[in-house]
Image (cartoon, rainbow over all chains, first blue to last red; front, side, top):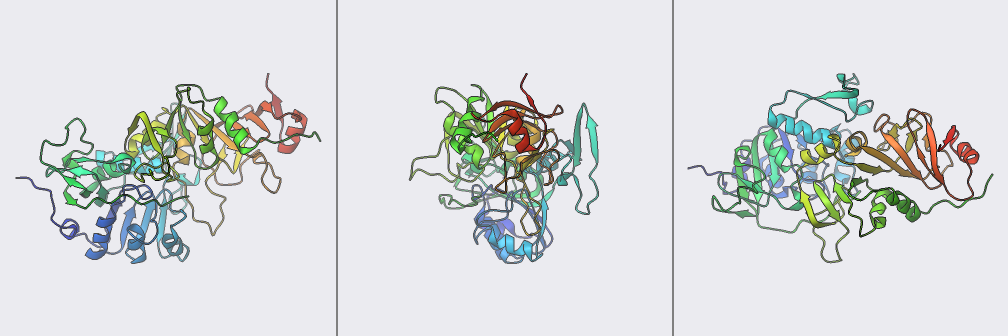
Length: 235
Length: 216
């Protein structure tokens, strides 16, 4: 019998190695799997590379992981927010590395990882600083059908932590409103994906026409009591 | 120098809204462009896209009905219109880069006469860089419109021959809606569509410091 339901968060995130690349879902506070991130803090892995759209809000969740000094590098599109002071300090004192990625490139690099695409040409960022590698050398570009493109590579995760609304023991997931955001592409892009859900249902209860993330992309689900998402991440 | 009264932020938003046709799929950038939604007539069906996975985005909810799983790109609570849909980030940005969004309206620090856009960074050492979805929108939407005051607070033109701030996109802007005039930009340079009362092309060209063609 397949049973992807983990009894505890600790069980779901156990074995995360130091140096792992961890994909964390969410946009602002919507879809941030804060409880799973807290579980990762307790688990203890260090020297992490974290991928998220932002760089944490306030002092909990991703911001707490940053504050605990566990993150070596963050890959994101929009770190600067009204309440991103934990990241801001670490960045200014050079205690965390930043790879800034246009949001669409971030999503597509994750999707590419999940879909087995070796690299792809994107129009986004052509002629800008985003068309340069970290060492300042230019990324590969190509002129295709009258348009300029930049070559971008996939982002593979060792672990993805995402937040969904409901799931079943095969790992099928549905989401809630715009909290879906990066969840489905991150689930595809990681070697191991853990989803928090507010409801675990029997097989067959999720409408197969409405399943958003099929269980093949999910390794573990953990039940978390429902709590309304708090606002945050304002610009 | 001619005497004229610049458009207020509301008047400018109204001016942009006037040019959005019924049926258009539109992404409004954070900040001033968000105001445009207030001036799209209720009977005119325009579908607003939000980068975080919403089509058919509606206005802010009534107080007490905020749901922070339903937010816009600026993380403010919004509503969903009947017929609206949710989708994940890769689909959302495929809508932009795949050329499915008809119009995006963005703010800008600088726009060049040929349509280069600089709106994500002023390149200051101490600032935290953040780009978000601006680069995807700027190059992906069928039309990229900029909404901005023509002059900086110091009185320098934000319409320039070449951007000095880091670029968001190359040759991607087609129209500039400013507080004093509406212009097109591109390989032919700047052409005025309209100006506020009391302003003439010569004075406008002087403010910008670049040649401005009259709309034929």
